[in-house]
Every structure is written in structure tokens, then in C-alpha cells.
Image (cartoon, rainbow, N blue to C red; front, side, top):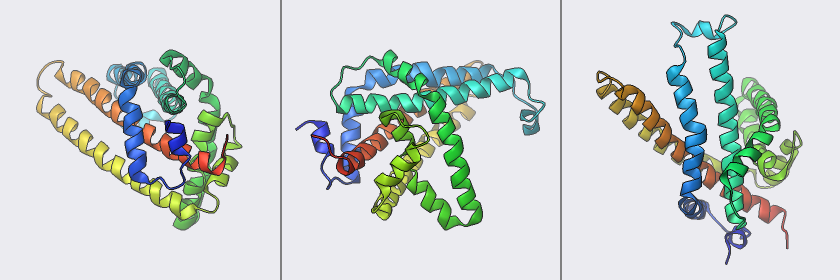
Length: 247
């Protein structure tokens, strides 16, 4: 049975998402390593080389052109890396030949709608939280798959409707599974970040080691993030294939 056929099963649970996601990640590790080297390491290098402001207020109107450039490049690369990981995962599920640089190119081509969706969806969800907490959680779950719809279904702002249709009738199920997946990721991510941060403090007095530790942290946390995105994409595909069955 292919992975796509497996993901058409409506009875998959969170454990299955981890199993399938890990299998895809492991089989395509070389491609995810390229993503880390092309996306995450350049972000880390830019942050190492960029001047650090004396106070956070300098990132306001008076922010230097260099700082603005670093922030802009970080946003672009982060979104492209996110979208590329989703495209790579579905390509693996569908057994399509994977050329990682073509995948990254697709990620760049879908940057603008992904960025606009992040802005619009973020504003809507923040308003929900400002009004009351419950509407915020409701909207966050309702639009949970919107970026997946942009990356994998070619949607624009109508990705909000696409996500809403996937969640409709199973809000509690989607909320529960997304909460569990997010909790596991945060525990692992912050555990790794704490360990790497402690190692950075210990080696901070040795020349060049702090910078090398930042690069190592970007490498490890980048791989961890792509594994998590692979599992989340498996979650989306299962919900999408069941709600929108194809021959």
C-alpha cells in the first residue's frame, strides 16, 4: 500500500502521523539537509553578521537599512523554507521525482500569497483573541490548514475557505490533534534549544565557538522544524484526502 493510499484512511491517529512523517523525513533526509543549508544556515549567518542594536526600540522607524534587510531576508527565507518543506513532503507521498532546488523554486514562487495569507489570517486570529480567548482559538483552528492550501493546492486568500471546509464538522478533532502535535513539538524544540543555549554559554569565552554554536543550533533546530512540518503535512493530507476523495 502506498503512502497516499494509507493517508486516505479516515481512522488514522496522531501516532500514525508521527510514523508516516518520520518515514518520509528519514527517506528524504538528504533533501531536508539541503533545505537547512539553503534556508536556515544563511538566516543564522545573516543574524551573526548583522549589527545588534543597543535596545529593541532601534528596530522601529530608525532601524538601520542593514537591520531591515536582515529582517526582510529572514521573513522571506523562513516562509520559503516552510512552503518548500510542505511541497517536498507531498511529493514524497505521491512518489514524484524530487529535485530539491525545483522544490525551493516553487517555494519562492508561492512566497507572496503565503506572506499575504499570514498577514490576513494573523490579523483575524489576533482580533479573535483580543475580543475573547474562545473566538481566537476557534478561528486559529478553523484556519489551521490555510498555509497548506496555499502551498499544496494553489489557493490564494480563498485558502481560508479551503481550511474552513476541511475543519467543518470536526473542529474538536482538529483542535485536539493540532494541540497534541504542537505540544510535542514545543517540548522537543525547547528542550533542544535549552541544551544548545547552555552549550553556547559554556563555550562563550572561546573565540569563534559562540558563532559556530549558533550555526550548529540553526542546523539542529532547522532539521527538527522540518521533521515537525513533515508530520503536520501528513496530518493535512490525511484530512484533505478523506474530505476530498480522489480516485
